[in-house]
Length: 529
Image 1: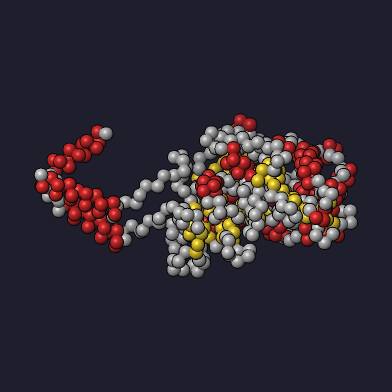
Image 2 (image 1 turned 30 degrees about the vertical axis):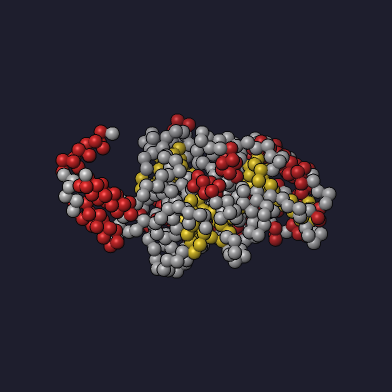
């Protein structure tokens, strides 16, 4: 009997030893089985986060976070997926309560508005009525200019008003249409609101226009598709409802025209500004209902619909602002602000990745044919850079040149490959084989992180603190932080791991009372389960 008790005691001691020093890290399930590996990394600088997001194979995005007790205006930048953010956004509302979506430069995005006015200075203003009239006006202009049909049911209406301030965000979830980037959105809004800006309002000049520098005046592309004869004159519109007073009693616009700049930080649904307690919630006059997939709650559907860059490449029509608009001073000033011709590709500005532009040109300029890049579009949600090609019609599907329809070159920045698609109706669903990009122009190869910048960590309680790690260069897998609740795995071959492994192995081998036959029987029983 004593022999059996000793054996049980040894087995218990071994179990405790293996539990204390496991041979492998504990298994951490993903949010959903079909998802790729989780990504959750924090950076002190926006450019570092953007570069890291571009180098990831997963579908990740950049968000800006404000931290309590940090310096005013100081932000850190998070790289993660939409689903991952939503999971922890609900779990740690205090740590992530000041969160902003970073709208990347050149990214295809939804039409969005930031609306506000000072209530004490506009005691007779009816904010809800003003929002309703603006939505009707913008929907009419979208149909008039692009032929896009939408209504208030397509507009997510978010509210963060306080006693002193009326504040709304509008996000237009247009059916199968989106703008080339937020610079084009700014031009569109600036154009349709021009009549109200030309009525002698001193505060409606360049300061609030959102179109201040050559850097912000980018990407002139296709013309509007609706004939001029179908357009109404802008001067016929009554836009007086958009005029409000600021705190100083001066005239200003209900629409903030300064939120259409590159890498803009746009506050998220359920987030508030630092030092404020007014998070964006669904407005009581909202008529938008999200179309959710299976397993996605209505609340998560609203969150996804509120993300300006959450747009898929498939089936999207890209809306742009005309370079030539009759009797439009804004358009004329834009034409005069175009950078020198060295930056132009077939009359249009180059993409944010000029190395890719030059590579694509080598694909369509050969055998005596001078193909050009007609325009480009960047889909941040899928990290796809789509080049619309002119004067080069070779199609891999038919193994010849099309007579009239041009082709598309699609560059997948995540997979670092390119492939060809086609405008021809017979090739509508065709996609060529994928070909690797040259190594020297791949983002993962070009990306370098700052050696001396500090990193942030988020613990399993949602607290975000500076990493105490030394400031030497870290590997990509160690560079920023780990997922909440996850302990960073030590490097393979670490001496402490080796000692733990040998100690456990020696303890097992010294147990002479476990015969080989018994071990084989246990393995057979395990395999048969």
